[in-house]
Image (cartoon, rainbow, N blue to C red; front, side):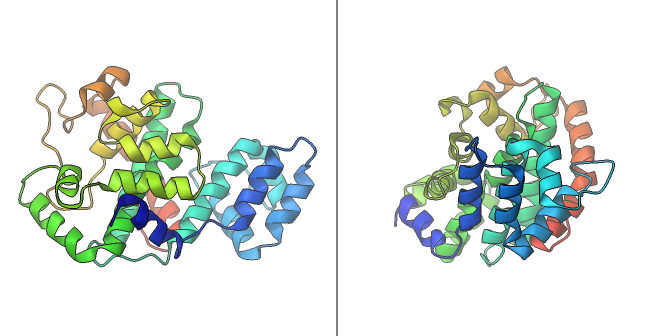
Length: 286
């Protein structure tokens, strides 16, 4: 089985809703009004309720409650609504994908915290697309979910070898399977027709020096992933003596200045938002 075949198999279970793609087209159409977009989204009451629940969390921190989709569009803007809709759509698509190989609550806990760390780090370096970095962090390990769901026994063997301290997880995956979870994630996001930023974050979060169009963003996700607790036993890199941080790729270190104090600050900020976000998106607490 190839990375592409694994990704294709997951798309039979988890697909993004048609409303997501329709709204994206409308947001790119100067003739579409806020009311038009609101009407399309409102045709799905469950999606509307979840969007409004998420936009009223501490993550967004708006001083007054947002009570309608048109109001959300006015406050968030087109790009903000697109990011919010993608986040909720991905969560809905993957809620039913289970993998007995790992604890699913811990998997989403890591993914959400990585997204929050990436968002915080993006803000620290003055990156304009902080919400995009949240999504990139949220999705960076999505290939693991496909791999663990489709090949549970082989994945379990790889995880056992990783826990024994043989080699990093992605290298063991390449050795045993001929590909790794990063390649599977890239293939899945290609099937979902998501932007290059998210695909590169999936494909190169372990090897940011291979990123093509988004080296800074991939470096941010790499660092956020490294300083966020991993799901799999034995998959935490040793710490660097000069920084007190987990071992980071030299390419990422050259692109993003990071120290233990900043990591602790971002982790505290992420902790304040992660529980509420995880409960709303996946029905589990962090």
